[in-house]
Image 1 (tube, one colour):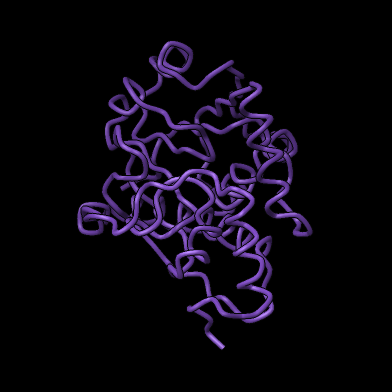
Image 2 (cartoon, rainbow, N blue to C red; image 1 turned 90 degrees about the vertical axis):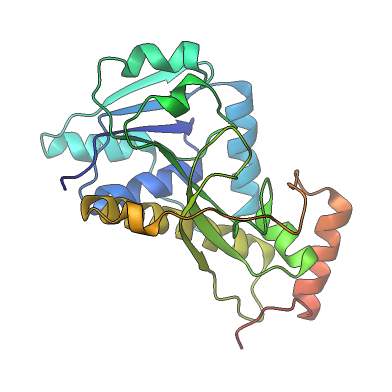
Length: 245
């Protein structure tokens, strides 16, 4: 099979999407279009993630990566919308023959967008699925002693419930801080999306795709301060249950 024709959606300059795009471009997976959500929510989510990975180096901006492509005579259409919903996004992709849509750090998206591409919408989640659905996965993983990792999955109308393509644990070493765990899951999410598109190119999605099964935990929301304090303490005292050393 050929490389997929795809659209790439992300919140404006989100570090998650920046890393994922960098990983995809490294293997010559170039989106037909990038659709950025420029909104108050996008700003809040970007700043939240930057705080979570503080002290770690993040990938170049989307604009910088596009400029690098342009120097190679590769032009990618880039548009901004106020929200990633069907009303705003569909007019930009209806004339594109898309195989897939890739989410590179977005809010929860439902509706017509999910049904449009021929081979589905895929997302990489910075947590192991199905065990750790929802927000702030590294925090909840430490809090509940769940292994830490990332997963690439298809998107349906649930929250992180679509069929799995890939999942992999992050090797957690003693002395790692919460910010390091958030950063490692972010990078791994980008790597897994790159590997997923490589598998698509090789025609292996049908053999890889599998249902998640049920989670022993509820869908998590953003971790409150009292949960984060427990997380910091467990990492400081090295009582988290899944160290590799």
